[in-house]
Amino acid sequence: MPDEPSGTDRALDLLVYGPIGLAAYLRDTAPSFLKLFVSRGRAIVDGQRKSVEGQLGQARVVGQFASVEGAPRVRRAVIDALGAARARTEDALEYLGGVAGVTPTPAGAPDTDPDLAPLAFRVVPQDQDGGAPLPIRDYDELSASQVVERLEGLPRDELDAIRAYEATHRARNTVLGKIEQLQRPVG
Image (cartoon, rainbow, N blue to C red; front, top):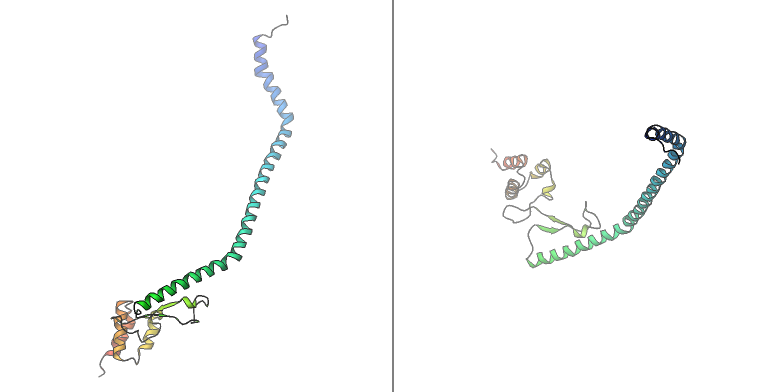
């Protein structure tokens, strides 16, 4: 019968010779394993990168197509919808007998987009009672100094209308002070 290794021999095998053999084996095979692991990792990363690049390329092509082909269609749809809304609004205003102060802007008016010019409306400022439009064109777009320049020579009733409108809207002291100065009795 063969000799059975003793407990001491087994402990030496397990605790000394086994780890030394494992270390020698790893020393000899580690470089080839490392190369294997590195090449496997690179393959995975390269595959993922190519997949993402492909998806980005497809998204870029779709985006370019949508911007070139879709934008004019969307613009036309918006213009058509606004035109229909304008027609319904005009019908409603006509039915109500017109609303003082809402007048269509003439087509081709300056500072409007030519495609949207037929759709534009402008609110004309009115006096306090909702009566006639104010005597100064585009009043709400003017600065206080521009309004003051246009006040000189207006009749008293027009100055009153502008004062009432200004007091209830922007209340600019420069405009109100100039109107007061123009309405003071001379002498």
